[in-house]
Amino acid sequence: MPANSATIKLASELIQHASVTPDDGGCQALIADRLEPLGFTTETFDCGKVSNLYARRGTAEPHLTFIGHTDVVPVGSLDAWRFPPFSATQADGFLHGRGAADMKGSVAAMVTACERIFAKGGINSMGSLSLLLTSDEEGEAIDGTRYVLEQLDARGENLQYCLVGEPTSEKTLGDTIKIGRRGSLSGLITVHGIQGHVAYPHLADNPVHRSGALITALAKCDWNDADGVFPDTTLQISNLHAGVGAENVIPGELELNFNIRFSPVQNATALKAQIEKICVDLELDYEIDWSPVTDPYRSAGSHLATIVSSAVFSELGVEPARSTAGGTSDGRFAAASGAEVVEFGPLNATIHQVDECVSIFDLDKLSQVYQRVIERMIGTNPK
Image 1 (tube, rainbow, N blue to C red):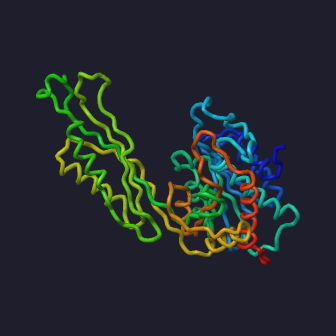
Image 2: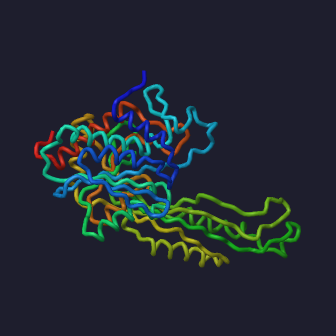
Image 3: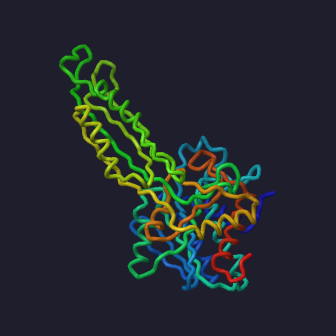
């Protein structure tokens, strides 16, 4: 028998609204329709193809903001899925579908937590609550959360405490929260040579042969800068390409993609200079194209982290570890504005994968934890 709690129903409905980035698929309109009867004032901050929703209830401090996204990554081959990716099928105690864990389940949990609190008059509040949702988290992340924060700042409105619903849990719900993230710097190195026939190598210049030392030098980069909060800065080569597909042709160029995940003790300018120096020292004929930098962040303060940890322990009996591992998130934009940022959501074991799914039991519990966070942050009689 399908689970039919309010959280699971809403999560299912959101999954059924296909919303591959930057498409919102109507998710935000659905959410706005549920928040407005609770006393939230809703605003849209659309930018280009990106949909953004900001909903706020109250104006006083402390101000707690839930940050989430309604876009999802592409599904890939439909034949590889056990169930259609936008069917929101329930099976074996799990809700299946693209976005179930990342992060329509969390968004549903946020909304139903608000509904339980405010539908019957709410709590005796001493602060305000808001939700900021975008359809540009899985994409370029330029016209989404960052854009909305710029618009809010222009009118003198700033966020104070932000809870991002990213899937942070590793093995059990609540075992990990994020208090920061490493930065990300990607580059494409093109090593130029001279194309020619393999039987006449003296008339050509093979960039693959020249790049062996480059690959070794990049692989040996070791910053050894872990500080107890952030892991070491690391570099990984992600793609190599050379050749025209024929076995008798020496390629004219080699392309190498790499990514650096870096802690706050590093900066992108210095990292770029280090990679450039490697190429220069090897006397390569090269060029580097750099992708936009994603800066690292470390949350300011610990008030929200303490409240989230206590809410997790009260509801789940788990003491969460505080981590900075994993990929990037929109938390960096809120942190850059001066807000304290904590990320907490369901298990991340299946995110971006075929057969993405989330535990039905966990989603209902997640909504309960979010409710406790709201009550403890802005309520005068926290539970």
